[in-house]
Amino acid sequence: MTYLLGIDGGGTGCRAALADMNGQVLGTGKSGSANIMTDMNTARLNILDATEAALADARIDHSAIPSLSAVLGLAGANVGSNAAQLQAMLPFRNSLVYSDGVIALQGALGDHDGTVVILGTGSAYVTRVGSDIRFAGGWGFKVSDLGGGARLGRDLLEETLLAYDKFHPSSPLTEAIMERFGGNPHRIVQFAHSARPSDFGSFAPMVFEYASQKDDVALALLRKTIGQIEEGLDAITANNPTRLSLLGGLGALYGPLLSPRYRAQLQTPLNDALTGAVQLAAQNFASKVTETVHG
Amino acid sequence: MTYLLGIDGGGTGCRAALADMNGQVLGTGKSGSANIMTDMNTARLNILDATEAALADARIDHSAIPSLSAVLGLAGANVGSNAAQLQAMLPFRNSLVYSDGVIALQGALGDHDGTVVILGTGSAYVTRVGSDIRFAGGWGFKVSDLGGGARLGRDLLEETLLAYDKFHPSSPLTEAIMERFGGNPHRIVQFAHSARPSDFGSFAPMVFEYASQKDDVALALLRKTIGQIEEGLDAITANNPTRLSLLGGLGALYGPLLSPRYRAQLQTPLNDALTGAVQLAAQNFASKVTETVHG
Image 1 (cartoon, one colour):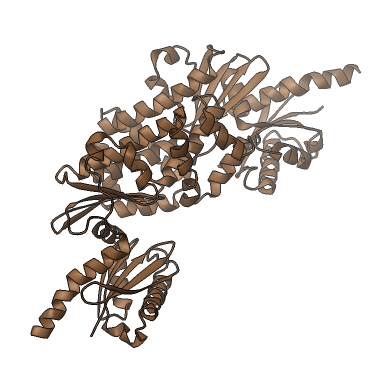
Image 2 (cartoon, chains in turn green, yellow):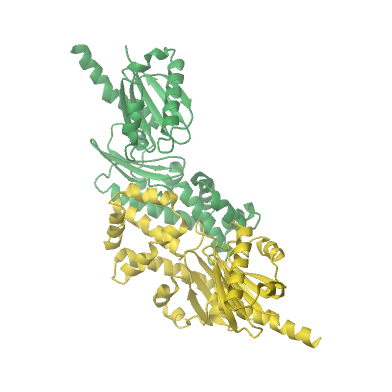
């Protein structure tokens, strides 16, 4: 008897699901950051910790580890040789390392063709037609990730300073932001100087909140941002006008604001990314085991 | 006999000019960085080094230092208590510490009312009506400095990735940038990850170069950026529709591209910022000396 393992790993944490060869989940576990871009070895250790927690949850001895067949969806796996490097370091019988976007797409769409846009701190597009999976966007806060929370929050701070200088009109939203910084624009500058993308992103929910109260600055920011998201959709779904799901912390907030033609394609995600990893493990490895039995 | 001293200090270096009480320059000197935001003490030492070099150039003994009457224009002098702190540390008889924008404005406009926009790596607006001087913009690369070289260069890298993803059209300019990074978008991301504002700014001249060849992406970037600069001018020159000078490395490139109404106001800068500092020293201290003589 052997088992399937699904892993969903990123900067904030790592989740594991242990399943039988039919993809039935037997136990789950969690651990810390598994960012293979910034720290490959910590990622490896946290993948193993989450795996052991999932085995314990399923009451299976950890001596099963060398027999596991795993699919891992990891942020940064599409960059350079990251995926191959990690693959060589893992103790499982089989390991398939994908980008986190691949397991998110599988989870959200199941086996359907379609597109997901992951709108969290960053933004990224993944689209699938049959076995052809394509990525776009997601190049990071500095030069990409339009529509992501970090860019939206940064835009809001910029608008607040433009309103302070009277270059743009102020609004209740820019006034609320200015008040948070004690009315002192230098404190916004200091904050921005050392802010991480997630720090900028912490202001993004306020834009949606004030937009629902018809705040002019909030509405203008979202109009621009939704335009950018739909430019991406125009390009990536041109040959694939089927299912569409918006994922990530801001996905559900953006959904109702899309143009009617994209709103009509919107589907509630079927499952989460971890379930997507388990499904892919079942697709990739369950049949191979059968072959071995019959061989 | 005493002397006037003008200082123009910033992140890249410090320049000093020694002048007689009529503002006639007798000698000049240079030294290293005088950024009072990041390192007050190094700034103080480099101000003294440049001063000693100017005294040597004028063949005046450095024992004259305690009798000098100085005007210093320094980046960061408008932030918090920086100016007062530095003032207390200087060995001159009189020291007036201004923002670098003030001496740039005085140099460019002389005693005329008007507005300068400093368009270098960053961007900042300074306007004067009589003795009333106002600042706007210039809050830094992260959340401000629209139209500055760093923002323009960053925008170009973003457009190059948007063209790579086919979200926006490509052009000879985006193709030239992509080629510089070996055709590999990940290398743009890596560059951006550790780029300083001046690193992004190094791409700004290419935008002007390609715009002159009617490159669509370059033209669109400059259209957006000039719109932002003119929004600032609309706000800041509303009560001061007189002289206008564009300063900094990109000032002369932007000038011919402004709308006719602003082009009509454009004046070649009369003098540089260091000359502005000497003029302000003459205005502030020459009459006081006269008072002392007559007193």
